[in-house]
Amino acid sequence: MSAKEGPLFEAFLNRYDAPAWDGVVRSLLPYIHEVDRTATRIWFAFFPLALARAFDLADDPEELARKLVMQGRYHLKDQIDSSHEFLYGHRYWPEVKRAVAEYAASAKAPASLDLALQIRELADKVAKQVKADESLLVAVTAIAFMTLQQVGCEPFDASLGTISIDRSRSARSPEQVLKARLRDDSQGLFGSLLGLEKKYTITFNENDRNATFGLIDGQHLTTAAAEDKRDYVSRDPRCTVNEGPIPVQCRSASCGTCWVGVLGGAERLSAVLPLERRRMKEFGYTDTDEERPLIRLACQSQPSGAVSIVIPPWNGVFGRFIRGEKSRLDEIEISGS
Image (cartoon, rainbow, N blue to C red):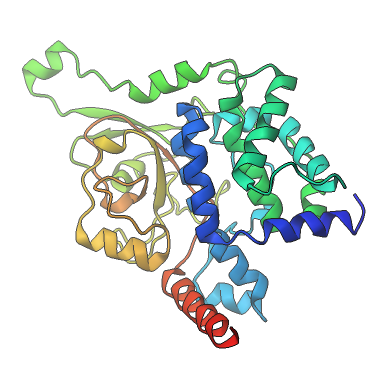
C-alpha cells in the first residue's frame, strides 16, 4: 500500500462519525445471519468510535485515560485480530482482513459511496472465495472496516490476521450455536418435585467449552461467578482473586467494571432498574430504553435461565465526557458555519 492510497480510503471512512456508523450498522443487520446479529451490536458497543476519536484528539492520552478511569485493553489497535473472537464470522477473519486491506489500497474508485453497500459487496466477494453464505461474512467485514478506521491502514496491515477458536467448537454450524444459546437447563422431574434450588449454566466464552460457571436461581451474575475459583487474574489483571471471570469491584453499580454483552438469553435476565439504566448511560456503555438490553451490569443482573455472555476487555467512565465533547464540537461547527 502506498502512503497516498491508504490515507485516501481512511479519509473516506472518516466521513462517517458515530451516528453515521449507527445508521450503517442498522441497515446491515437484516443482512447479517442471526448467529451474529446480536454479537455485531455488542462489538460496536464494546469499541465505540466516539471513544477512539477522543483518544486520537487528546493532547495527553494517558491523562485522558486516568480521567476516564480506563482499565484493561481499551485500544483496538492492540487487539485487531482478537476483538471479535465471540462472533461466528471470526473464523473468516484472515480472508476478510486481507480483502479489506487490498480494498483500501486499491486506486480504483468504488462503484458506490454508500459504506453499507461497500461492506455487503466485499462480504459477498469473500463469501464466494471461502464458499460460505454471505450473511456469515457481513458482520466481520463491517468490523474490519471500523477497525481500519480506528487504527489506521498501516497497523491494520501489520496485524497477523490470526483467529482463535477452540478446536472442539470450530466445526459447529451457525444453527448449532443458536440452538445452544436457546437451550435452557432442565431441572429434572425429581428436582422440580422436591423443590430443589434451580441451577443454570452461564457461558462466558462460546469458543471455550470450559468457559462456564453455575448459577443458583436468584443470584446475580457476579455473585455466581465468584464461586468459580479458577485463576482468571493471569488472564485479565482486572479480575480479583476468588471473584471469578467477571471483573468486579463494587457490586453496587458504582464502578462499571462488571459490564457484559448478552449473546443469548437476554430475555432470561431481570429487567433493568432505574439505577442500572442511569449508571450505564453515565459509564457510556449504552443509552437505550430497551427493557432487557444487550449490554448489562453483571452485578445488577439476575438470570432465570441459562445465559451466554461476553466479557469486554476493558471498562471506564466516559459517558459524560463524550456527551460534553460532542456538544463542544457541535458549537465549534455552528460558530464556524
